[in-house]
Length: 366
Image 1: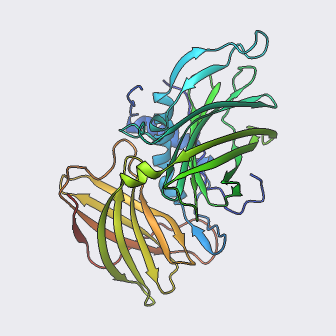
Image 2: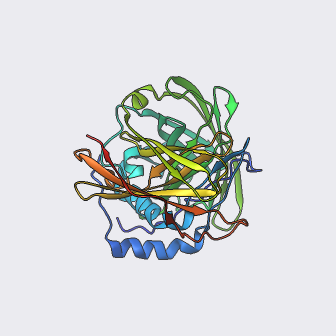
Image 3: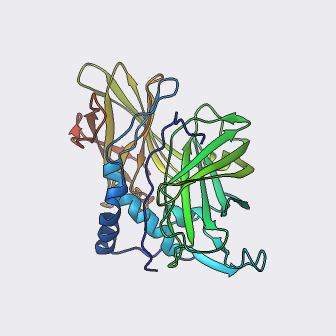
């Protein structure tokens, strides 16, 4: 599929004033570069710090741009158009139902059948049809994917520039960060696939919870907001995914400039993601990265995803997990190298000037 893809991987502010199976075909490096060059102007470079009750969440925009383009391309290439379903002769004739799984959307090599909840519920308002496909509940996270179409089935021209959502868990509004991506699923640009990961704080995800996802605004390509009421209610239980997560203790301390200490607590791995969990004792204005090389030669990178400045706890997430960029499950050892970078005092473009902290360490993982 040679559709042009557009990328919407900007981190959404936690305290925003808006209320808000076919096998994957991997694009060539030249194709990915072409797509990336076309959308770089749309990507907000740098990194924003969002706080709610002293909670700070970081996402590396500039560094992640290339990877997210792979993600959107994979989502588009693996979409399976099943059938045209006629809702009414005059209005809905061109709407297509899409079988687009979270595994496809995230470019994962393994399916999430044992952990996903299939919703497949449609809401229509103000000329747009949104269908919530699947959700996966995980530790401190809810991942969703849905499609957007025009009610008349016509091309949308360009992907909606912004999507404003509100998430409620057990009736309580969530204010965590949101990250993800989107892309057209067909050559005619009539169907957009969206996958978003909501950071969840203070909720026990290892049980069944009730959720309400409210999409209330789409920004069209000319900057015009389309207001609507696309509401989805569902339940999901993350207990099986959390129980099936492999946890490998690390327990290694590193001293930072200024005297603070970062402790790498554990490496966790499941079918959805891989993390390195850490905590900091003392004051620090750093974000961190870990380069990991296992004994099979696989090289992956963990970037800071969440850091709670109040508790000092956070985690780095494997950003290479797309297209099986994870630590090899057959590996016996992995060597990890910690690097850090001070956040700028003023907002703006990040320097990406990471410096190694301490010596590399080797973990026995199998």
